[in-house]
Length: 324
Image (tube, rainbow, N blue to C red; front, side, top):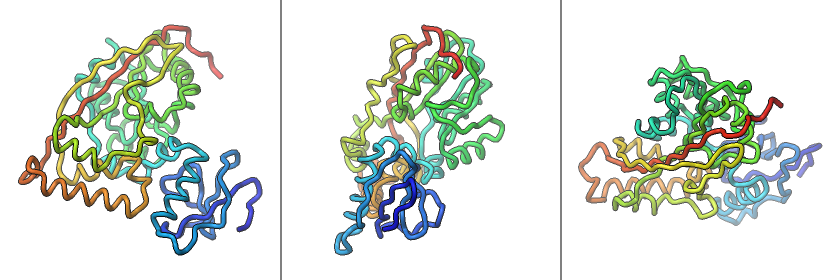
């Protein structure tokens, strides 16, 4: 295999389709495809060099070995966090919004200017916009920003991350992060969030989690549950100084959705997006079988999916970080 100056290369498994030269590899944002079925990893992001998988091995084995090399080297969080662009349309069709009680609790009284950080396709953004707030959305993935701009053409959408927010110092009164804080490098993200908040501004975090006290939802979780190393800890998010202690509330509610939307929701999970193609297809087949056979679901065109929304809030208690 030819060495590329200042880059390390690794063989793309044959299980993947041949990449277009210069095209970003789906689900792996740190890498760029080059001619010759090679992944080119950006300088500073080491990846192992090897001769490629043995032809006799299965496609699943080849894919898993390639993914394991990449994940072990750059971290599963970066790989999974960058995977959503490949399923932006499914994310928009399948993911739920958030209960209004959650927004009531997360937003400080009298707030006007709000940042939706890690906005995705704008599930939370549209709810903030509907409240007549001055909202700006920051999202790192271009495919997700495109979906957001399509559904909310009048809202400001900026490229950026929690570690590098594209806003001036003290420019918002509240920052909300829905379904995304577990992707953040808090050593860098916490000071950056503090920088863009006004003094005494509020940070709110939220996660929608399926309520598995319902039998069919527990079975859905068994089918789709990620591996232990892929499971984020939504119950104990870290923020720390210069913010005060975290307050928490849990809100139970029910989301109405179609069968197709539920399949889209599952297909938009990072551990499904990044799975080997045959593993992904197997999971989705199992979900379809559950929808067709579970007594609580047969005969219904729309489903009532119970959720618990876990909400956390904290205020900026120390002087905000000065401009860089």
